[in-house]
Image: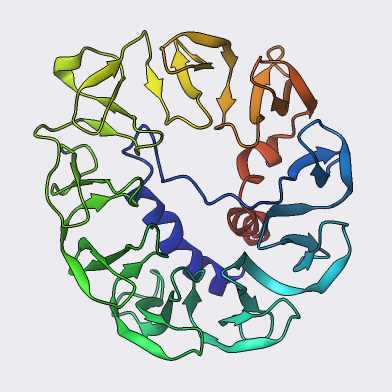
Length: 384
């Protein structure tokens, strides 16, 4: 394993707990690109299809990311490059890692220095690779980290990042001072200082002082947070002023989407329910787990299988899947066992019919959803 990558990725993986692990709804939904092409796997390689399941770009890469800003990151011969919607290389594979294009620039990791910088769509360095860590631009700012020497024994990670924000000229707008920082979402970015999370605006102003043990992105103007030390501590919903807007606590919270959010609380029974922005319970059902709505449908777990409900709470797609994702452009990516040893992955439509499916690969299931995570795990066996 490349130690520099591991050191860089571990804070990212750990910070994912901030907005995912304790929350039935998880992280706020990713912004959708106008180009609706979907990843598929064929003979161990990945390509892109349309919403009908028709191949648009044949499978030829070991890994691909979603299209964003008109380009998609693809991996060939161990390095990442970018293709257009016809499958032609716009930028040849040459980067260790990338988060893809957003707001016109892509954060990429240089192969020589393992430092991060930003390129434009012609592959030119707009911001030189001088950063220990860098995430995508949103609202004109991007989180970056400077490398710091850790005062720990040698058997621990030797370095860590101290995070600030730069503008598109590479100028530091917010000096590195945070233990972690995220990209902006709905005009707010999460920052961690002295072990607590708060929120800043695109001007770098601390809008909500660090005071939370864990928190989520804002979605529809609302975020869920806990002031407790542990993920299992009670959660509340706040507005962009940091004010609690629903006068009660929950054991688990999901993000608001289409006016509803899935939550879990002891006095609501041993099942998850959906509330509106005033805290009223709108939907109940025999759900052991529930995710947020997308395109009028929400994934719910009934027993040990997943299906989809509509906004009346009716199960409109049978609970028979073992893994499930929200609908995007009329289709959803799902996974299910066909017997004790075999499984399939693919896409279904809103009637639950298969649009396209393929035999599922264990490695793809574990790491195929996120190129950054794939890179991390792909390198791991080398240390054995």
